[in-house]
Structure formats: C-alpha cells, structure tokens
Amino acid sequence: MGSKKQINVVGAVVIDQGLILCAQRGPQGSLAGMWEFPGGKIEPGESPREALKREINEELRCVVEVGERVETTSHEYDFGVVTLTTHYCELVSGTPTLTEHSDVRWLPPAELDTLRWAPADIPAVEKIQADLAS
Ligand SMILES: Nc1nc2c([nH]c(=O)n2[C@H]2C[C@H](O)[C@@H](COP(=O)(O)OP(=O)(O)OP(=O)(O)O)O2)c(=O)[nH]1
Image (cartoon, rainbow, N blue to C red; front, side, top):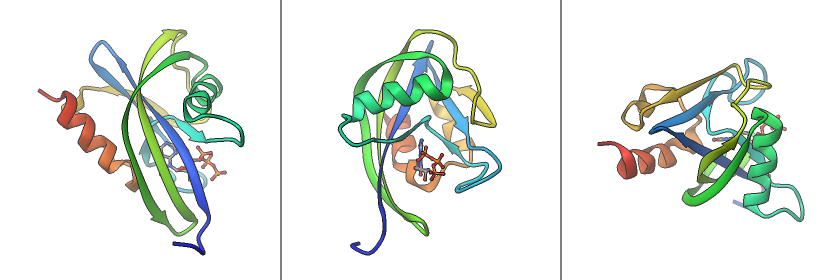
C-alpha cells in the first residue's frame, strides 16, 4: 500500500444467450496474452458505469447496458495496484469487434476457468461461476 500507483479499472462481463465474452490481451505490454474482461481505466470525472460504456464502445465497437456489479477486488502487480470492478452487461447494439485484443471467445460460465486470466480477475471469475454455472 501507499508507494505503488493506484489504478482504477472497470471490466464488462458481457452475457449474451448464456455465454460470457472473454477477451485476450495483446502480445505486447503488461499481462500480455492473458484473458480479461474488456474495459479499462476510469478517467477523472467519470463514474464507473460511464467509463465502462465508453471503453466498450472504443474497444469492441458496440453498445452495452451496464447492470449489476459482480465484484470489486484489488491486486498488486509489479506496475501498480489495480482495483478492478466488474459489472454484468448486456449487448444493446452492434457486434463485439476485435480492435486491440488478440482474441475474443464466448464461453459458458462453467468453462471460464479454462483460460489463463489476469490475476486481478480470478475473484470475479469465481463469483460468476458461483452465480451462473449450473
Ligand atoms: N480492462 C481490464 N484491465 C484489467 C483487467 N484485469 C486486470 O488486471 N487489468 C489491468 C490491465 C491494465 O494494467 C489495467 C487496465 O488498463 P487498460 O485497459 O488501460 O490497459 P492497458 O494495458 O491498455 O493500459 P496501459 O497500462 O498500457 O496504459 O488493468 C480486466 O479484466 N480488464
């Protein structure tokens, strides 16, 4: 605590027809190749929900409705402490399109744990499985 950079991030758990959208980070940069919930850093003056809508628009070129919060957790990486808040989201318009991610997959909740997730995402993955996996 204290000395490390604090990074506030929002992630979208997009559900469509019972499947969850999972996005793979690109080969460059931090957490390269790991899976995450699409989203990004909250900008000054933005609410978490506004940030999420904006990020999904920018990254996936589609519009989501932001629903209930899934989880908030902090994880300390070497580059800083990420506090990740995830929300369930529904697609309102458009089809998720790859822009900066390497890959996207739609998985049933029970199969989420087959991917190599960014460490900050593990509690959210477990919560989603507890909420939805049958
Ligand atoms: N969007 C998103 N970011 C996540 C998740 N889990 C997790 O640890 N992160 C981290 C990765 C980044 O360090 C930060 C999100 O910032 P960002 O989306 O702007 O990522 P970035 O790598 O493009 O940004 P940068 O650090 O290169 O400036 O949070 C997640 O599920 N979704």
